Length: 122
Image (tube, rainbow, N blue to C red; front, side):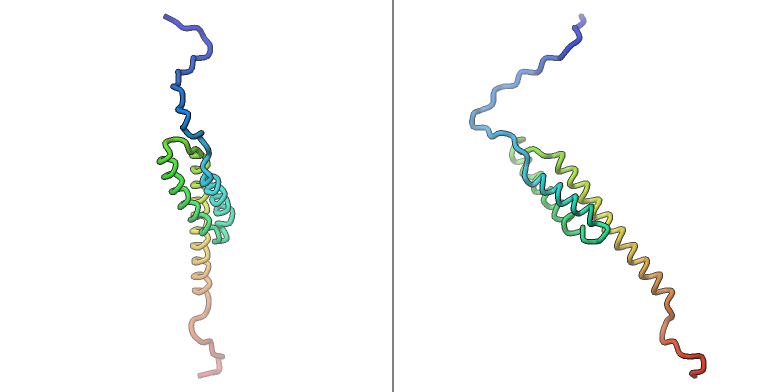
């Protein structure tokens, strides 16, 4: 038996209960994305650690609320993007801190140790 090419009929969905809320995007999802973006953009200047950390905490809360809502809160894609940007911001902060520490150690190693006296001082 073969079927004709064309669109596949959609599965019948039961009618929604009239008191069910409409699915809406979680407001925290947009905040997580914005904070993650700020964290990624300012991560190299070490200032990105604060918004990135707040974004990760908000993402955790938003996931918990979305799970508890039973599917009526959406925005999982914005949460994922915001979390990724926040993690990129934290990685940039770590790279900047390690780079500054290495530069400081190299400069400290190149400087003379102790007090430098003139050659004619005993």
